[in-house]
Amino acid sequence: MSVTIDIRDLTSLASSLSRAGDKVEREARKALDGAAEVIRNEAAATARSYPQATGKLAGNVQVTGDGDARQVGSTVREGWYLANGSPNTGGPRPWLDAPAERGAQQLGEELSRIDLL
Amino acid sequence: MSGYSSRLLTDAIVAWLQGDGVTVGDGEKPAAAAFPYAVVYAFFTPPPTGSIVGEDSDAEAVYRIHSVGSTRQQCQWLADKVNARMRVAALTVAGLTVMRMSDDGRQPGEREDNVQPPIWQARDQYRVFLTTT
Image 1 (cartoon, each protein chain N blue to C red):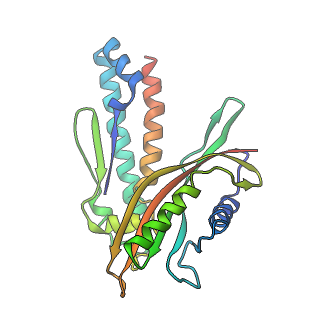
Image 2: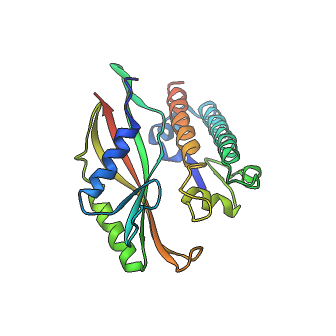
């Protein structure tokens, strides 16, 4: 269970990167790292808040990847069951999806600001 | 934000599917659950957006709809029926206008062995784009 945020998807940023060089790229990478960390922390906190969760998932939400993309996710099976629902855990719970959408939206806003640099 | 009622929106989605002859559970297995049946879950809502005249007037609501059957055929038949219905943005809900409903990704049916006898379950995600009125 993981999500990927990828600054290569933003074409306006890509053209900006080619024009403005190192400073913009540094800022964009910093924003990407920040967003990935926010998503990780929120996902862990959300997972921790469910009574069905054992705590194993909350302790195992990881950020991986380098360069222009980061992945946030967990290899703990509980993550899949919580996100998709099961007879034992009940309905699906957006422990990763909701933080990922919020984080990606904030990243988009931050990249728009950087685009103006 | 002028706000909208997520309760009324979910009610409308449940009624929309029921109007197509689908047995629907509202966040849980329906009481009289003969196969196949669907279960609607209000999944989450990203932060609202908008324009300069209404900064928080546009919103999205993400729903998960599970289609459950005793066989793969039954489960996928219902999932396809739900999918066709959930791509038609014709809901009427007080306080908002539904602009578009889209397929947000589908898991096309898996056998669930945690219950006996086993069931088949498709887990599909839909996104409702709306603006408050």
